Image 1 (cartoon, rainbow, N blue to C red):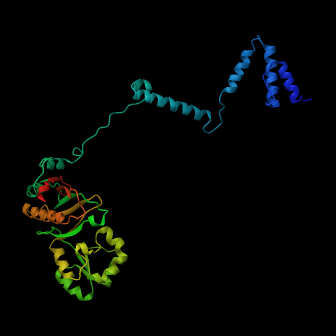
Image 2 (image 1 turned 135 degrees about the horizontal axis):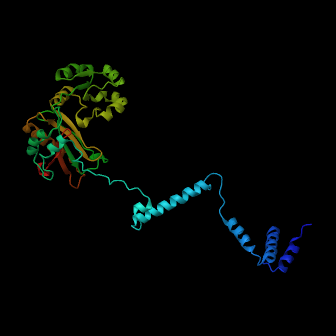
Image 3 (image 1 turned 90 degrees about the horizontal axis):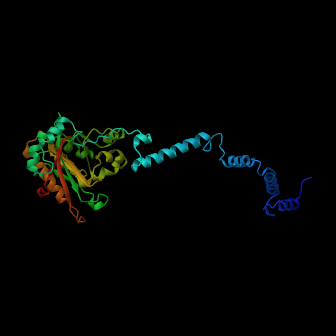
Length: 341
């Protein structure tokens, strides 16, 4: 017959065991058994066996799988030991060879110029990196620095102190190059039928109205400049997604939305080009070809720089033109003195 809790408490008290009524029956029974065992085996040498058994009970139990499995616990210990060795190596307390860490060869870093081709390096020797050149001097040097086999473009790049996110500082304008661009432009005109003949005589390559829209439906954009009349601009709205990203959407600021389409075609053919600031506040524009004479390149570049200076927004308070560089396609750049503007 099982003993009651009261009887177990009295028995435990008789054995001088520290138990209270708050303990469960199972806990009191286990304490009594342990107390009796200790009293019976005291001095017999069996106490060490019981202690070793208790020590085994204190060891963490492992699972068959998962984070508590023997394999996972071992991997965690090895990872922790490895991290400790790394910290000691970093602190200089332990040699990498003793820590078992394989140290590979030091990475080789080369400058941007070292990674360039042999032809580019030879061209770069013609330019003094820290010197600021005049437009005339740069126009004489640049044709010699071209490293490509085709007739490369001569480009002007201007860093501006503007914020393109502001509407009044999003610079966009047109400029007529005195000596042209050196590139034959294909002009498309979207205008009413009564202006088709005049546009063709002015040199337009593609002229049309409804038939031109059919061409846009097929995404046939085989032209470099698109000129449209104001009354037909509404019809081009649905094609903005294909014209806009390519810079072909007509715009009044660039002179490609006008009632005088014949004059606009003549100006485009003569070398009138558009320039606009990008998201980084930089203007990139081609001012001729390597085959141009230095005088022609210099004249075109000077006209472009003057047009950019004249386009300064009234809201810009700091330094407007911050840096100017000229270069050829895939060639080294030449720094231009700001005094040239």
